[in-house]
Picture (cartoon, rainbow, N blue to C red):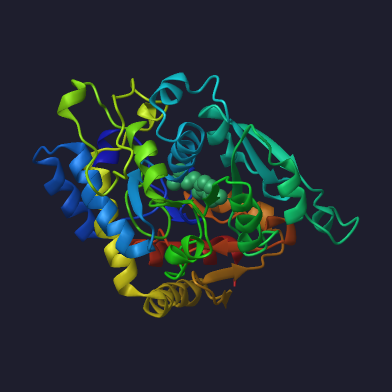
Length: 381
Ligand SMILES: *Cc1c(COP(=O)(O)O)cnc(C)c1O
């Protein structure tokens, strides 16, 4: 085993697709496709055109690219909103975009929006999230977003969560009335499969998804889908275009009527390079994710949790798109630490309530018995 050679212990990842725990696990069909991809060379813009066809079929968007993660998709999406197809503007990023402001509801700020600032964007917050502070019932309104849009606005950022306000269609309405695109961070909103189409269907101009979470693609993969001109801009700011202008044409999957007159320098997204192996792996994983469907996936994951619960002799399964096993030990923080000391990582999102969470997404067949035994040993019962 390669990790033995490297002197690193493997862990039981019952925490879910956390990046720090090496994110998701891949089906053998995905790893086989990546190995095949690694064995031959291709032109990367043609591979991205093939990816676009698959992402278009899956999302209903005009175009799409594979990125090295949802955070990279956010960075590239922001760069696209700022530069569009203006090559001089691409070359100037991350400095001096004429439009560099991204309006966002303050309640939707999160640590991933850093990617927008890395591209050269500036975050403009609106609203007061009193429904979270407990001091009131309101959140940002569409009117506040409309009022914050001005001549320097590059886009509106909307972070998809079941509780996000204002609703996306309202945000799209005010943004489009002002001629400004809406960029959606939907990194962790799959499953359900229907969310592949939902945000585009509600009018988003660009949507970011993670490939290394429940989709089951490579850890460092993601997707950016949306309007053709914006996706083309994102692609041009990521590709290695070190060749004479005349030797490059954007494939028809990305080219509108305004094919660029010259090639940009290496763009602000060049540091988010995605490999052919990740592109191919993500496409195979996406096909499997859609083909399995929500009901079969949820039943399969529930079956894994039932076996963990039975081996542990405790716990209660909470149903959902990704079902979870909830454990309530007498001292949840101490139990979490004791399990972690044994190389067993559980979800910590509900520790405040005294709940330990077993997420089935990254558990392999060989993890189930030792996980159950570790839970029984540490939690008793
Ligand atoms: C996980 C996540 C990201 C980052 O996704 P990666 O594919 O790991 O880059 C961005 N935004 C949100 C809301 C996320 O949950």
